Length: 147
Image (spheres, rainbow, N blue to C red):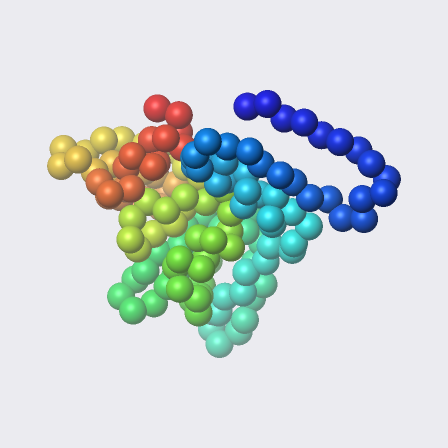
């Protein structure tokens, strides 16, 4: 990919123009990154009737458990989130990837991935958390890994 940067002190705010023949996942990730630049990325969640402010870097896994959307962090704390999963997926950016209809994982917290016999893949995350990558999300996941 060719990149061109122009530095001009007359610009009051940075802006980017992207020229592509088609919108690929890499280009979409670049757009998301550029759009979120300068925005504070924080997330609020509840536990024990208290609201906590969490840094996305500390999040390992977000998944549905019954009727609740649950988040696990680096300290193995469990929080309840009051947003839909698709909103969190958009808000959290490129370090997170959807692996099923009911789960998003922090890409950098994956220890290893193994194939299962039925076409799914299972991954192990930090703190020993395990989750399944369903067949519908397997292709996207492999593209992200570069496999």
